[in-house]
Amino acid sequence: MFLKDMEEAAIDALNNDRYLGGENVVKFEEEFARFIGTKCAVSTSSGTAALAFILSSLDAQGKRWITSPMSFIASANCIVHAGGKPEFADISMKDYCLDPKAAETGARNGAQGIIPVHLYGQPVDFDRFSEISEKHGTNIVEDACQAHGAQYKGRMVGSLGIAAAFSFYPSKNMTVLGDGGMVTTNDENIASTCQKLRDSGRVSKYEHDLIGYTARLGSVSAAIGRVQLKHLREWNERRRAIALKYHDELKDVKGLTLPPMPDKNFKPVFHQFVVRTRDRDKLKDYLEEKDIESGIHYPIPIHLQPIYKQKYGYKEGAYKNSELLAKQCLSLPMHVLLTDQQVSYICETIQNFFAR
Image (cartoon, rainbow, N blue to C red; front, side, top):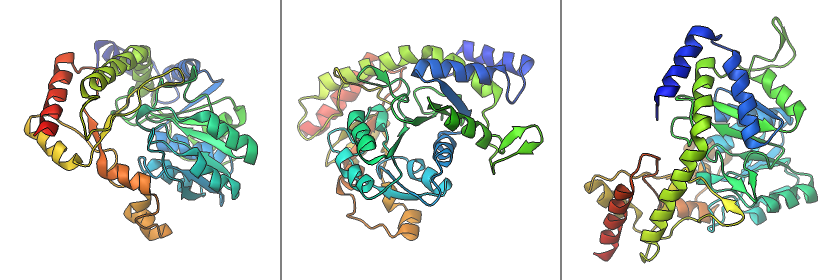
């Protein structure tokens, strides 16, 4: 969504700010850190870069890291980018997030870290991962790329682990209208290393002490992000209202499983509203016939992506819950411009499909 105040901020940045490393970048980082509740925030060119830089700052080279196979491929690619060894643990069918019990097996066997993904904007049960960290000395890095503003037991997602990564890709709950990302952390050493990694390993203008990357966020993008951040709470509340309406109108439909709703411990932001049904493909086609667009997030689990099968030898059947969700999940329309009437039409169409 591109509003007038975003246009004005972008034009002002073009006219008055440095294109890279400008005042808007500094203020965006400060404001985002304050929103999440961490000491530090470091902007990057993408959520993928944010994840990879966190792992590099933790010296992941040659070490094993565990994440969910049911996510966008970047959740595992970041481990490879940092020189680590990606491993997976299956998801829980309760919330579709990484199952802590399954992940603990890898931690018990010496994995350096775990990357739980707050999938679809649903917070993971973080206390379980905190217990694993204390018990096995395992680093917990949050993949919060779909969960801007989600809360776990009153705390913002992104402030729970040793560090977290966010994405500002255009489909997210807030965006910079292009690629962009953010690291959040209370660890100043991680923040400092990430700052250098995004900027060619730079210590000063012509001095470098790391093999870094060119992965900075531009000032115009940061200016847009600052405005989007101001709207985020309002937009997330609208998403929650839409999710509640979906839930109320679809809760009695047999053959359809709905996502978890907010409670005293979990406050999701519904980046996607994902239902599950054995008739997923037929339902998707039926919705399209009625001019209702839907999506599949994600049809191929990471371990079954061609490159992961080729490089690491993963095979079908390795992570059954993830594979089942990939065959049954369907993302219903979810954006802040949806009207209540449109949501009701979508729900009525789904009811008609299952009543046939």
